[in-house]
Amino acid sequence: MRSHKTIYRGTWALAMAAAMTLTSCDDLFEPALENQRDINAMEGEPSYAQGILANAYILLPYQSGPQSDLATDDAVCNDQTNNYLRIATGAWAAENDPLSQWQNRYNAIQYINIMLEHVDNVAWANTPALNQMYCDHFKGESYALRALNMFHLLRAHCGYTADGRLMGVPIMLRHLEAGDDLNLPRATFKECLDRIMLDIDSALVLLRYEDGDVDSEEQVPAKYRQMGGTMGDYNRAFGSHMRGKINGRIVEGIRAQVALFAASPAYNKDSGMGWNQAADMAAVVLDRIGGVAGMDPTGWKWFANHSDIDNLKQGESPAEMLWRDNRSGDSEHGLEDTNYPPSLYGNGRTNPTQNLVDAFPMANGYPIADAASGYDPQNPYAGRDPRLAMYILLNGDVMGSNSSQIITGTYGSNRDALNRDNGYSTRTGYYLRKWLRSDVNLNPSSTTGKYHYTPRIRYTEIFLDYAEAANEAWGPTGRGSHNYSAYDVVKALRQRAGVGVSNGDPYLESIKGDKDKMRELIRNERRLELCFENHRFWDLRRWKVELSKLNETARGMQIDQNSDGTLQYTLLPNVETRNYKEYMYYGPIPYAEIIKWSNLEQNQGW
View 1 (tube, rainbow, N blue to C red):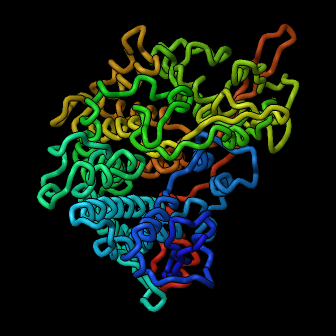
View 2: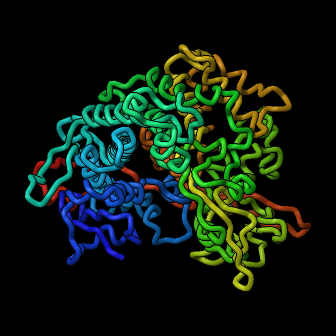
View 3: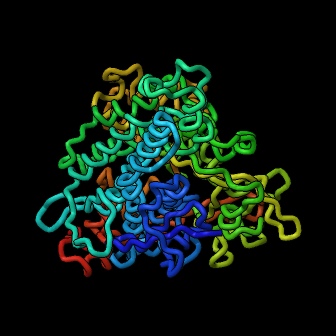
C-alpha cells in the first residue's frame, strides 16, 4: 500500500501526513524518510486531498469515558498514578498538564489550513457543478473543524497575563513550514472568539443542516442547478453517505457551546458575549427539534438504551445525540475493563464521591438537606432521584441480570469492599455505572463485549446551556423571544427522570421567582445530567466558583454491618484533598513552548 506523506514542521505540528491510507494515529507524527510527496499533488488527486481532512477528524478533541471528572468533586481514581488525580492533589504544572490541547489542536489546524489553501484547486469532479458541490462541502467542514479546534484550545489555554489582559492563543490561518517565522504571539481572548465565530459563520453558509439524499431536482439548491447540477450530483456531494461528518446542525451546537463559555463569569468581562446572545444561540439548536417538546424522554439514560445502540445504522444518531462518534465493534469492553467492580473482573477506576451522591435530590424534588425532603441518613438511597442509581453503582446493587450483589460495605467478602485492595477497590464506597453496558461479561472464560459510542454533543447539554443563559438574561421564567424559559427546561429535565412527578415538584415551584436559587438548581442539574462526561472541570472554572469549591475535599461513605444485620452509614470526610491555587481557574501555556518562543507569554501564576 502506497503511503502519501509530506512532512511539514511548524510550531506545533510535528508532521503532516496526507493520505487516507494511513493506518494509525502514530503514523501521523512519524517522519517519513521515503515516498515523500509534494503537498500540491493533492490538487490532482481527490482521495489524497480528502486524506488531509480525514486526519483532522482523527484528532477530534473528545474523550471516551470519565477523565477530567477525576480532578473534580465528582470522582476520585483508585490508581494513584492517574494524571488527573495528580493534578487535583497538587501536581498540575505547565510541564505536567494532561488537559493540554496545544499539540493535537494545532496539528489538526495545520491539516485544516492545508485543505483550505488547496480546496478550490482540487479536481473533485469532471463537471463544474459537482466539482463546486464537493468543494463547498469540504470547505465548510474545514471551517467548522477549525472553529472546533480553536474553541478547545481557547478553553484549555486562555488566561490573564501579568499585565491584566485576558489572552487567548496564537491564531493560525495558514499552514506553517520550517522556513516560516514560528515565534508567534498570542491573540487576545476576544480576537480568538471573533475568529471562531467567523469560521462558524463561514461553515454555516456552505454546509447543509443535515446531510441526506434528496428525491427531486427541485430540492437541489438553485446555485447548483444554475451550474447544471442534478439530484444525482447533489446526493453524491451532500447525500446520506456523508452522515456522521460535521454538518450545519453540529456547527450550531458548537456555536452554542462557545457562546455559553464566552458569556460565563470567568470570561465575559473581556469577551463581549452576553447571556442573551448565548441563550439565543442555544435556542436556534433547540427550536429545530421543537423546543422542550423535542426533548428525548430517555435521553438521560442514553448509555443504557441498548436497543438504540445495537441497531444504529451508519451515520444515524439517537434522538438525544446531536453528534456522536462512530460506533465501536460489537466486541468492545474497554470501559468495562476500566470501571467494572473487581468481582466483575474490572479495575474499578472511577469512584464517584459522596459529594456527588449528596447532590442528587429526593424523588420528590427536594434537596436532601431540605427539611421537607424526607431524607433518612441511615437509609440514604431510598426515595432518591432515579438518576442516582442509574449513574452510580450503590452498595447492594447488581450490574447485569446474572450478577451477584456488589457489596461496597466493609462487610463485603471480596475486593469490591471499601479499600479492600489498593488499586482495585473503591475508595469512596461507590463504583461507576454511567457509560457502562450491564450486558458486557468480562469473565475470562466467556468474555463478551457490546457496541459502544461516545457522545460528542448531547441535546441535554444544549438544553442546559439555554437554561443557564436564559436565567441570567431574563430570569427563571423569562423567555426572551423564545417559547420556553429556564424554568420550563429544568421542569422538563426533572420530570423525564422521574423527579417531582408525583407531587408537582414543589421545590422547583418555590424557587421559580428567584434567579439566584434557580442558578444553583440549574448548575446542580447540569452536574447530575452531565456527570462523568468531562464537563464539571471546565464548568467550575468558567463559573469562577470560590476557590474553596475547587478545593472541596472528596468524601466517601463507609457502610458497616451490625450484629443484627442492619447497616450503619458513616461519612468518610477526607478521601482525597484537593490542592488548586487561585491562578488555576485558567490553564497554562505548555512550558516546552514558553522556553522555545519568546513571543509566547505565560498565564499569570504558571
